[in-house]
Image 1 (cartoon, rainbow over the protein chains, first blue to last red):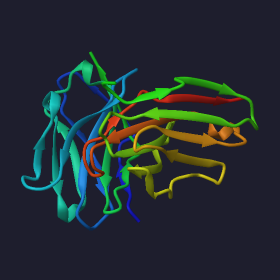
Image 2 (cartoon, chains in turn cyan, red):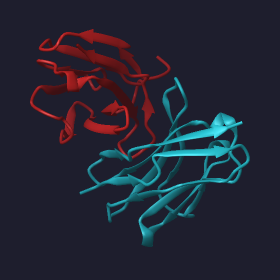
Image 3 (tube, chains in turn red, blue):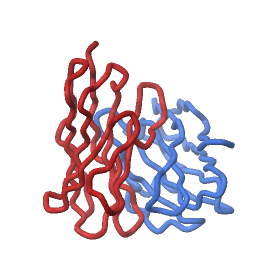
Length: 112
Length: 113
């Protein structure tokens, strides 16, 4: 069955620290992968997406993610976090049925 | 409108009552999704529509939950005989075809007393 797993549920970092959030998906066919972010009190919004091509994708606000097919992973990274990155981050994948499945989410707290 | 609109934004109801939650997607978006967001539970898929048909209803938790979409636009999620465990934020999202970026509404906070 299609599933998405996020390893880190709650991450606390100081400003300027590097960030990596893990995401693994189970679907073995063609996947469309996404990272969404939900800032406090705001709607979910798209950070970045991978459909095909270059496995290293860049998104908004300095975020990037690397698709590694052999590991079924799509980890999110940022070299230097800011206090304004405090939010909840969700990894998601589409399977061939058109269903978009989300991971459990990771709450990131950045200390100034 | 410019974005996905959900109403009401907050709903407080008594256990056993029925509730209807409404979603107005972005004009022209053929795909429409419903999710439930509970603290610590992430986003739970409920159902998705492509046009007026629902190719995947597998996420509906029980037969108390149903959804419809008319005219390829507005969708209504109905919960009958509400239970306390139904308390959550219900999110709607729309997109052009399925498989593309989704735009989310601000959700309906449902509280069942």
